Image (cartoon, helix red, strand yellow):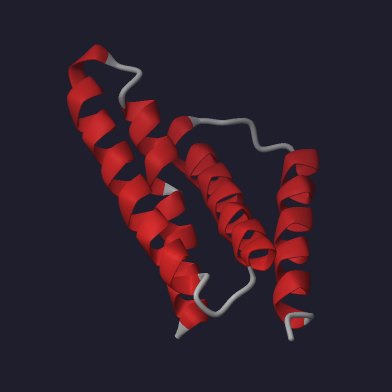
Length: 106
């Protein structure tokens, strides 16, 4: 169950940078801040649950990796962020590192 909590924590981790992006515009500032704080709290709660069984270094690295890769994808798909081959390679390396941590977790 701890790994499911960690995946949920990583998925909710994507929400707070999106909320901060929404908060950049005056007309969506309030909702953006609410989204960011809510997703931070939910993400943190699931990370806390995951860390009951998964070591802190492993859980934190995977949590941030999921958040970074997911936020990259959201940025490309919805915000027009650059999407060069090098950027995709960088995200692939993050995903590979996260997978390696999971596979070598004992």
